[in-house]
Image 1 (cartoon, helix red, strand yellow):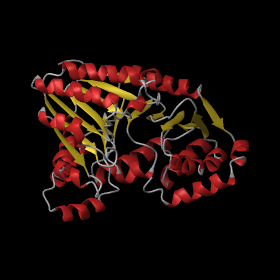
Image 2 (image 1 turned 180 degrees about the horizontal axis):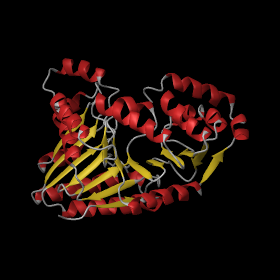
Image 3 (image 1 turned 135 degrees about the horizontal axis):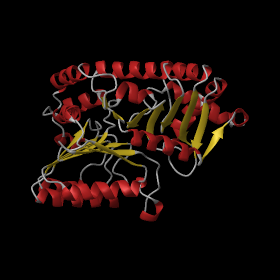
Length: 379
């Protein structure tokens, strides 16, 4: 049996170079489950590489989210179809009727409109690529030019992705089939049984069912409460619920080193306004808050003592209540230390938020931030 390995990518250029090379080397299958697949120059390159793989006989399936990828279609996607590559849209927006034929639903279009209206707040936020059932990419990067460096036409977004080799991915495969086929009840029951048989320190963390969501949330609260040394959070969209906020503040009160790293300028400004509404109470509790300055911070990592989580989940209501997410608890001590060092390095490119700065926040931003919290369950 081949050895299990973990490799961390904090550079978008190196990540996409490695991904494209792995696609070129694929022999049997590729499954892509991704929130946003942009048809920009990077997306076109990956599409061309996938088509070449399909021509070699590789079986390829692509699942995109209807909100993250609202314009899935057009000549590039038709080229995928012609190459025999299957693609589907998870919960298309109800007014995107042209995407209805890329779902498993065979209902009349008017019924689908009603159905997808009820699902409009339920998104697939995962970013998973599985190649030949042996190589797995998981992290915060979509297929989007913005993740590349400015030298390669991107915006140098700060992200973290992990490449797993020879990982036990039965749960990931089952989760993909759940979303792909929409056989939700039976497959979710299997996922529940699968995770009930595993220990708390499992590698893969999913949230495909109410049981898994509740279990994940409870375990996270327990880990924060039991922290002995540190709780270091990197979150692109930080809008914690009451229970997480309480545990974070209690940890800081007890003397734990609690640090939160968020973007200075978010790609969704409304998120920043809402996040800033928590700054004052967090600072009063002893939590240190840092805003990343060079570019959009889009990474999602969590460090509690020596336990390290990397994936797609944010500290917000969407990840807790609505969106499908996936995270990996790193097992390799070298990988854990890499993430810890990346966090420290990122702090060198931040400004720390102190109370005097809070007092200088424009009154309009304070009001908008409070108003944003009214809709915190959907942002």
